[in-house]
Structure formats: C-alpha cells, structure tokens
Image: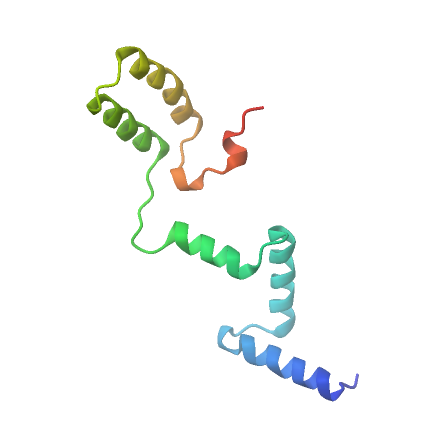
Length: 114
C-alpha cells in the first residue's frame, strides 16, 4: 500500500500521539472506537473529566447507607417531626438495602421509578 503525502502526515501524527503509551496504532484505534461506541455523543475527554471528578485521588466514597445515616441525623438535628423522620427511615432504609454501593456509583437508571 502506498500512502499519499497527506496520509503519511496523518499516520505520523497518530503514531506521535500514542508513542508515550507503548501501544500499536491499531490497538489504540480499536480501543478508541469501542469507547466512542459506548459514549455515544460524548467524547473520551468528557468521559475522562467525569471519571476524574468522581474518582480523583484522595476522594473517598461514601456508602449509600452512610450517606442516609448522615442525612437522617442532620434532619433530626434540624428538629424535623417524628412523622417526617419515621417516613425517612421507612423509605431510605429500604433504599440502603437495595444499593450496597458508594453514592457516586449510582446512576439515574439505578433509581428510576418504573
């Protein structure tokens, strides 16, 4: 196969872009294509920024049950009524049992009411 001048330029830039990662160009292209299929209209940069915002070093996640416990304690400190607090306990304890994960791992689909 012969490359045109423009094709050689594109090929060279692509190789330069991935050189630091030690990947062959075809592996990088396959990985990119798979990621874009999953992301739809979002870019890999969008996904990376989202990931870093939610999984940055030094940020610890809070389990759903922990977050609910803190929320209920705050509402009690605010002086909410017994009826309100009982309603929270009824609703949120079931939620905590259903989602034994960190809050940041929940997605809208997880909590969608059908």
